[in-house]
Structures are given as C-alpha cells and as structure tokens.
Length: 287
Image (cartoon, rainbow, N blue to C red; front, side):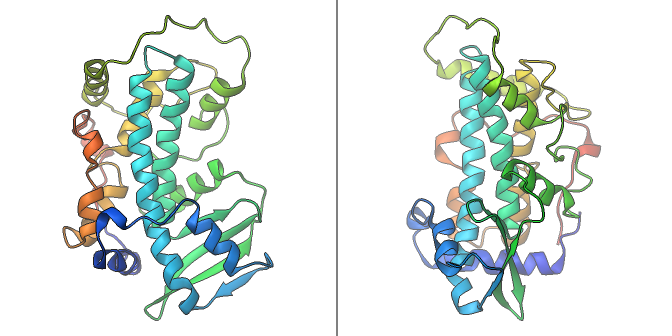
C-alpha cells in the first residue's frame, strides 16, 4: 500500500522534535495530551488552535501514539500469561491489546477524543505547520467505537481484514463486555503462579498458527481466548502491526526516540514479532 504524501510528511514532522532529546525522557507525564487540550480549549467550544499553540500538542500526539503501541504489546504479554489462570482476564487484556493497537494508529493519523467534553480533535498539517481543530462529536460514540471507525476509514487500513469496525456481537468489544459484565461465567480454574516458559510457549504457539482470515471474537462463543489472542497478536506484531510498519516506512532508522521504543526490551524475551499467515493478508507500506 502506497503511503499518501501528506501523511508521510505528517509522520516525519511529528517525530522530528523527538530526535533532539534523550529517548528515555521523550514521554510526557500522565494525561499530558488531554490536559493540554483542555487548557487550550477551556470553553469547550468548537475551535481552531493556532500553530504556535499546536506545536507542543503535536509532539504529545506522537508520544501518545507510541505509548499506546507499547501498551498493546504489554497487554498481549499479560493476556498470554493469564491464558490458563483466568479466562476472564485473558479475554479482557487480549481485547485491550487490540484496542491499544487501533488507538495508537488513530493518534498517529492525528485523531484524539476528548471524553469529558465530547469533542474530537484533528491534528493536520497546513502550510508545513500543525494545526488542531476541535469539533463536537456527531454521535455519542465511546472511544472503543470511535477509534476503530477512524482507522477502518483510512485508505491504508480499509481493506485490511485485521482492522474492523467494533460493533455488534461479532466484535472484539462484545467479547470484552461479556467477560466484564455477564453473570454466571464458567468456574474459575485453579490458580497457578505464572511461568515465563509457559508465556513464551503460548506466544510461540499463537505466532505459528497459520491465519487464512481473521476470526473476530464473538460474545456468543465465550471464552474464545485463542481468537482474541490471535487477532491481537496479528494487530501488534512487527511488519504486520501496521503501526510499526508505517512508522518504519516513513522515518526508517533516522529517529532515536523511535529506534529505542520500536523494540521494547521488556518484550524481547517473550516474542519475536513473527507470524504465519496467507500472503494476501499482508499490506506492506511503501512511500
């Protein structure tokens, strides 16, 4: 898939400020992006932020995107570690791995939802400078529908079977909701301390399963832990994660912040980001 020239410039410009500081200190503090947007738009009105106010916000869009991708990887490790310990939490954390992967792409594309003020923030390049537009939500969508819809609407991901709308019984969210809220779920397995080898073996098994088409988890078939984990893994992994592949295609090895965080050290012992799937499911990005 050829990356649009405007998006290419967007990603390059978004990552550039992070190259002038130590990667270990690149992330802002907790809730920095949402707090900055609240302060920039205290009235909650529909608004266009000038470029001078948008520059620091644009930087936080980028670090928020990388943070969400790292959360996706971390959540997948948690899901794998809980496979035999808790069907409930293996399902929930597996879903959140997928959700964080989707949200990371939405932030990279320049979208953010202000939950309390029910506003949508759009970060765009105008004449070489970032500008933020803040508009009212057109419908009362939760972020678990909004971000998925944004990514699915992108030409880069519209045809990708691993990225779907998050609606109805046949959706990742419905399976998470069932695990969270349904009563009388199956009996709890005997609790056993987590074992590193078990986690590695589980992830290796998931990565080796050949996927001909993604199996979307269905709330009517619970717990479908393997389906949850397979689709999460394929959204998260290296050259198929779509986020890492997209950033790699645009900035390569030219950004120290991305070079450090694209391959988290705490995940290396457990997963090698390899998959087995039909070649037609791959969507390599090119400039």
